[in-house]
Length: 402
Image: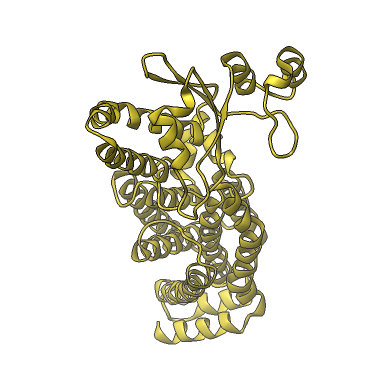
């Protein structure tokens, strides 16, 4: 088996197309993702949240003062506050392409313009009551609205502290105000769960998943070449005295070695050079990637033993599984995975690429926990099942004459 392993590992590294698709192509695609998406999130992640403030004397309210002092880590202001009337604020909140002209006609100059000269849209309205109460109105419920709601809730929890501090003097009030501001900054930093909030990082998850699935193609090429009905090499292997198990084991280990080397280089490039933050600890990222490669090998081994079809037919079956699985997992459009999860979640549970991307997503968003372990257990179960089915089908394939 060692001689078979040595022969095939040399053959793989000497095959230029295999090296290109296994190593060069993922690095090229990762670089394109980086340059295409790298600057977009950097520009959006510290964008000021446009909020309308209404209420008599709102400018001097303690909560508003805290909002004006909030900043991101890079020093940019978190809030773009507009002090206006309640009617104008509601118009700015519900502005859209259809209602823009109507809002301008009704409220005219009451509606503030943004830096581009367009009618300003706000993500929420904060109303300061005559009794000092704070209420929030939002029209949607995305990341920024959730952060804003968390800030308001945090303030309400500290409102009594601020009120008591104001009665004890300016110094006590300043300390309380700083404490509240710190709590609100924490709300902002944790508003989108996960170590990396970049909405484009799932494309890199799918890139790793694609590399894992490339192992299935290389396994298919190698194992099918050992089958007597598919190649002259298979005829010689079938007529030799060496057991089929040893041949297949040597081939699988060779492909696995090649794919792990490619994966290691790709991860070093993405994490070390491009500085992509996958979320989670690097050892867990490596473990997830290795298990993904093993699952890819299992898929290729299983498909290579489906019936006595020709290589072309088996390759078509595998391509449909991997390319279709890539589309469903969000390789071409990240939103598609969520659509499948809502309409047919069982597909995401058995689709190898979806399972791999879900493991990375769980690691980033929730850390090492129940959801991550569920993904890992699913990967292990699919890998074992695919190798077991492949072994059963391999034993059933017998040839009356060679």
